[in-house]
Amino acid sequence: MRKKVFQLLVDNTSGVLSRISGLFSRRGYNIESITAGVTADPRFTRITIVASGDDEILDQIEKQVAKLVDVRDIKELAPDDSVYRELVLIKVRATAEMRQGVISVADIFRAKIIDVAPESLIIELTGNQAKIEAFISLLDGYEILELARTGIAGLGRGTENVTYLP
Image 1 (cartoon, rainbow, N blue to C red):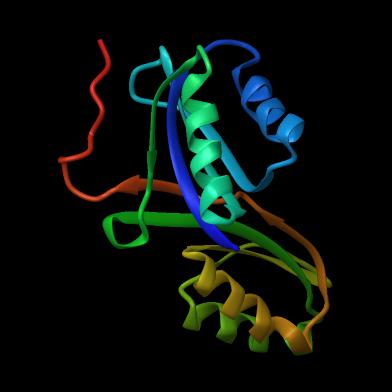
Image 2: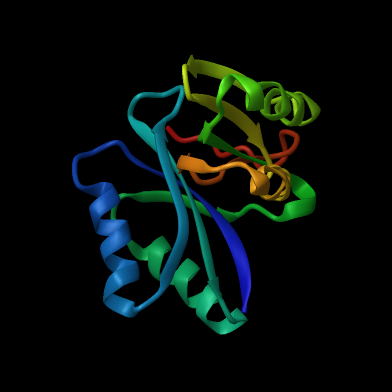
């Protein structure tokens, strides 16, 4: 099984995300991550989907999604030709005595402390999945109270693969 990152440009209409995710569930395909947001042109939404499967399943996903009425463009974001980022918010139990250790680990990863409470910290980190996984593993000695991940957002490098829609 391998992962593939798909970038879709779709019409910004109600229910479009539901129709896309419904296609995956009807066919039993797995979505590992899905993010969506309006583009610079408010008529369109950019959706980034990370799916896993064998080559046949991944090719089938791409073909089936491309057939949907609202989908204007679909392309694979190849790792070498793209930039991926994910945001994670992590609430860690940290008493006054433990706080400096958590802050030191966060500083190494250029994470931000965005909230301090008497017994916890909330840390914000943006990066690729490997960086986020490495950071989480270094917090192993601390109690993670809550964790929220956004999923991958990505764009292709350069100007060669920019899609212009009328």
